[in-house]
Image (cartoon, rainbow, N blue to C red; front, side):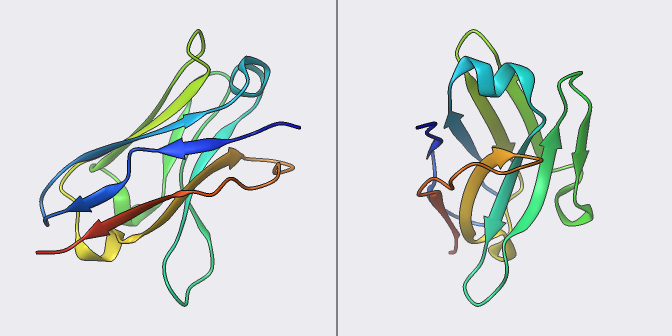
Length: 114
């Protein structure tokens, strides 16, 4: 069973930074377009950043210029660097394939609050 394991979340003040990590198999990271998603309380899960197999990236407007998605294939890891965090970024963050999602991991909680 393929596992996606997210980590790196936490409590941070507005304006702070966090780097999220998503560990998966090398096959998954190497051969799939990947995305970071988030789900805030009472809201649906949304895609916030994606990276294709050719390393093209795309972001939802609300995080453009603040978040950066990347991947390290030898480490079988996808990252999300989050800077200038805002309270509205508070959510559980997940990674998954962009297409034909796998079973969702547990996610990692990001809370932005003073």
